[in-house]
Length: 192
Image (cartoon, rainbow, N blue to C red; front, side, top):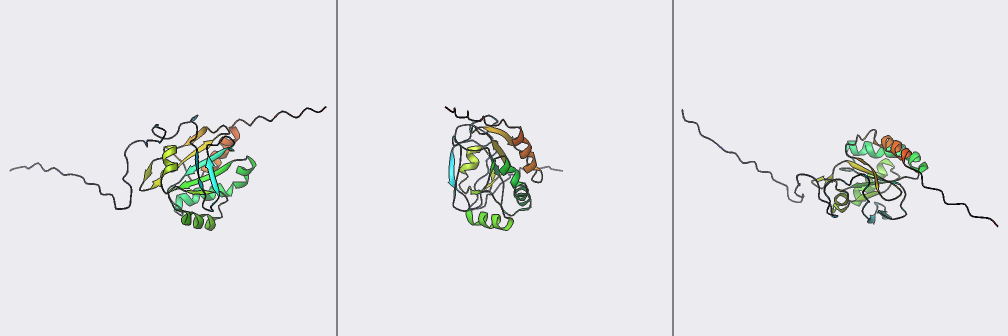
């Protein structure tokens, strides 16, 4: 009996219109690699929300913020996560925390998603992938991985949530917000 050695080549095809998928950690525009780490300054980013209102991060007077990346509007996990934030929205407001949702979907998709689920926070259409790249969030076929960043009052990453459970994430973030140091109160004015 003769045995022949047959070699097979695995060919991975990427459909037209989809970006190639990079292997390994994401390289950030700041020269770093991978997710922004706790303590890292947040990049300065500015765009408009799904409603056309300005949204920015990385400014000196920003409030505590949660920037959460999610794969796609109206999918089961993404809907559960967004609705969980909505359901405890009053607690985020009481703590003075703003929430910014970011995905690769366009503004029309975001408007529909936000309207269907009465989402009270801005959604960013990161169609270019600039926000995901700046935070080091990996993407597949234009969809970012489900990752969140809690940003403190000094514009630094306070917590990174790399393995998000959509059903409990909102409450997990609220617990971490409660543990953040409070902003020092300004001195009271001296009266003559």
